[in-house]
Each structure stands twice: as C-alpha cells, then as structure tokens.
Image (cartoon, rainbow over all chains, first blue to last red; front, side, top):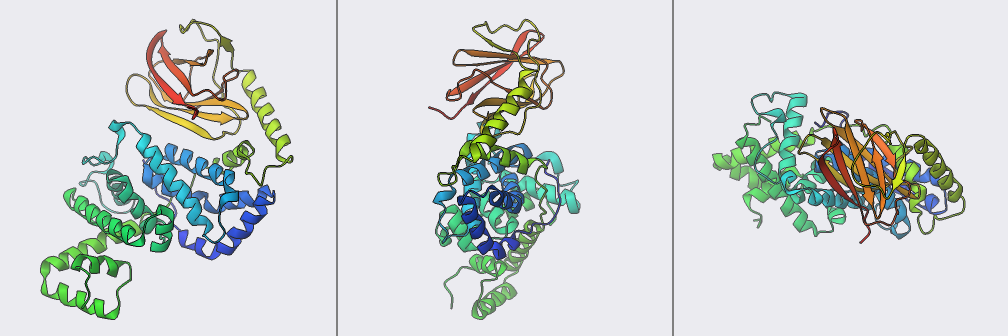
Amino acid sequence: MIGLGQPFACRTVLVTEDDDRALVERCLRGDRSAFEQLVVRYQKPVFNAALRLLHSPEDARDVAQTTFLKAYEHLASYEASFKFYSWLYRIAVNEALDALHARKPSEALDGSEPDQTGGPEQVAEGEQLGRAIESELAQINPDLRAVIVLRHLMHLSYQDMSDILVLPEKTVKSRLYSARQLLRERFQQHGLKT
Amino acid sequence: MTHASPLELMHAEIDGELNWHQKGELAQLVLADAQARAEREGLRRVCAALDALTAVEPPGDLRSSILAALPQVASPRVRSAAFVPDWRIAAAVAAVLIAGAVVFETGRGPRLTGSEAVGTMAAAEGLTLDTVRLDSGPVQGRVRLYRQGSGLALAFEVRASAPVDALVTGDGATLRVSSLGPRTRVQLPGFDPDTHAVEVSFFVNGHRVGGATLKAGRP
C-alpha cells in the first residue's frame, strides 16, 4: 500500500536550475559531495514519480537508485542547455516504464479490475480517497499514467513533459486529455466520489 | 472562433491555457448544454483529486545506498584515482561482513543437506540488475540481484510458513543459503560478475518449492 505523506513540492525545483548546473559542474570536476546534494534534492520527487508509476515502494526504490546511478554514470553527457531535473526525470520515467514492461503479464497494470485495497464503499476522504485514486491510476496504461504523474503529481509544464517523454507537446497534451478522460470514467465506474 | 473541441477547451481551462475569447466560448457552451456542464465538472474534480495527492518520504537509507554505489559506476570525467580507495574499502568491508556468515561452495549438487550458509545483512547496496517477484507457491516476496563492490549480491525479501533455504547457481558456482529472513542479503563470492544470469532455487524441508532466474544484464 502506498502511504500518504507530505504534499508534493516539485515546483520548488524550478528555482534551483542554476544551482543544479553548478552542482553538475562541481560533480564533473570530481566533487562527490555535489552529487550528494543533487541526490538529496531530487530523491523525493524521483522516488515518488517511480512509486506512482509502479505502485510498489520496493520497485520504486530500485528505480530511484538506478536512476541516480545512471545519472552519475552519464553525467558527462548531460547538456547544460537542458534542465537537469528534466534530464533526471527522463531517466527515472524510462527506468520505471522499463520495469513495468518487464513485469510478468499477470502483473500488468492495464487490466480493468480495480485494486480492492480501497473499494468505493469504503472510500470517504483523506487517505482512503488518496489510496483509491492511486489504485485507479495504477490500472491505466503506463504511457497515460506517465503524463498524469508528470502533470498532476510533479506539476511539470508541457515543455518539461515534452522534454522528459521526448514527445511533441501536442502529443503530450493529447495523451494527458485521454488519461484524464479515462480516469474520470474509471472514477465514475467504481463510484469514486472526488 | 476557435478550432478547439469542447473537450479540448475544458482540458485547456484546467491547465490555465484559455484566452479570454476561449473562456467566453466555453462559458457559453456549458451554459447551454447540461451534459457539457457535467463533463466539465467531472474533469475538474478528477484533476483536483489528482493534484491533492501527497508525496511520501523516500526510504531513509535511499541516499546512503545510492552514494555507496557511486564509485562502481564512475562517470567518464569523474573517474579519478580518488575514488579507487573508497571503492576498495567498501568492497573489503562488504566482503568481511559477508565472509563470516556465508559459506561458498563449488561443484556440489543442487540438493540441500543442511544449513551451510546463513544469510545476513550486507553493506550498502549497489546497482540493481534484476528483480523477480515470487507471487505463487509457498514462498512469497521477491529476490533482487545487484552489484556489490566488484561482485554480485542477492537481496531476499521472502515470506513463507516454514524456514526457506536457497540454492544459488551461476556459471558453475554454487552457493547455499539457509534460513532466509524477510530481509536477507548475501554476497555471491566466486560468481563471475560478468555472468549473464543467476539461478535461485527455493527449498522448504528439503523439497524444491520454486525458483527464479535473475539476469545480470550481460548477453
């Protein structure tokens, strides 16, 4: 079960763009503590993005760890003209989607059966509602789930989403609209009172 | 007039992307059409609910496990002699921690005859190579293959109604681990770090009850 905690605060990363570049530069000069600062800064959004995509804390942890290690390994290929967090989140999303695709068919999350951990009858407010929404989110196609996570949970712009998903903005919007429609239908279908 | 459909206008409104003309167009639309009104309200509620989801704190040891694994994947420009001692120290510490608890064997058959090896908690974990979920049979949970220092290691998170032993094989090397716990870490000394896969068999009361193949990422 995915627990609930602090509100997402991903918008704050927008003001740290220059800091990120400086940290990357320091890291590339061999300053390991600079990378530690990047880990501290982004471990929460990366972990949460993976968590919402994978619906498994254990798998999210693995993806978060692999994301940072890959980022470190390929840091020299990072282009400073792009936002560091877009680059990092791209790695995270790709890792999470790869992990999803690697799951056995029985674990595929694109079926129509809702997670029964928070049935509509029990759903009231607060945590239960949050869990029910997360359960519904976990049931939709991973590509649609990714745009929901980036937009509504990480509060990223279309431009950032386009960079991360390597898709035209128009396609990102189209996917997002489809994902919202689908979730709305699922919420209605399962009696979720939002 | 805009070329956007009513639904596109509703989504764009949620995203704060409507100009004053489009806002007027949408307002007229929902005023005249009850179904459009309901659709707009439904979408707004869904988006509000999604926006209200809260973040969870990452595992407390996530940062340390990432940092501990860094020297194993040196960045091209970061690669420096300064990292080598850290890496060697980490590998040596991990080896010492594991050595007292794990017995390594080669060339033995797959049958478990006793508790020759006992899993233990390893030092900081490295890059995950593969994870297999165990969701059928008497052993439940997952097993994860990851790099530890210059070698390989396994993380078992298993549950069962009886003590579970494991037999790990790969490229001629064999390791027996007895009495797996809910969080057991074992290094795989003698296993080729470049092996393509590691096989794990689970035993309860001497009987094989399941297995898993973990890919090490090498073709």
